[in-house]
Length: 342
Image (cartoon, rainbow, N blue to C red; front, side, top):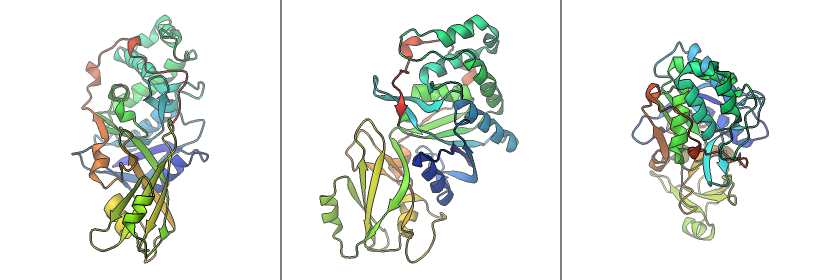
């Protein structure tokens, strides 16, 4: 059972639709070969001042205590990735470290935190901590405000004591950077951590009823379309994905169907046994989740119940953070001053 943690930000529909989606479809595929994760109906939503790495760590710790330190506790964290325009890679989470800084949760910061966590006595060395916060060896990212590492340290240490099972992150392309993903997992002290290597999208599916539509012609005339066929009837849905221009990961969708009952689509492509309403006429819009392979044509997108969705979730683990390599490695610095939300 996974507990969902995400932002309460009303201005970002990504988070709103994610919450709506998991209420109706309370399951998330794990990486290929693992069992799907049931999502608990209890959702932790963090306000803007708490939507920080520090706030997320505290929430994870709170859930673990509430669940009496179960050894099978999973966390589902829905969060945007942080993109660097120099390296053209997702290199962390678009999550400020604390509410006292705009610096994001990036690989360079996590490496330094892991160095401190490997020998907890290091946090008592004020000169060392100040050096880690102020050093800017490559001149590529903002220095951390004094006290940032100490503010995070206890949160990481407390969470590590509870030894989470899995942390499933759903946000764009973090799985394409397993070094950062693994470093975050070791800092958290979880056994496994995963994220997709493509774009993760949540939204509403607006569909149009067109009983005489020719699906092949519709696909041919609408770039980025796929025909989705009901396995047990002649019902179909043509789904079109329209990605926003790079570097954005955002996308919009269109859909056309020849039948007004879309329960088959919900069962076959999203989740069998979901809370999707079983009525003769489908809701005019309902929440969906879709993943896009950014290294393939626009038609390369998958829904959660399709095998390719799980195939594009990258898992790192089992993690043995007690043996993690310590040290600060500026050559691996993945951050930059030009991070922006994806």
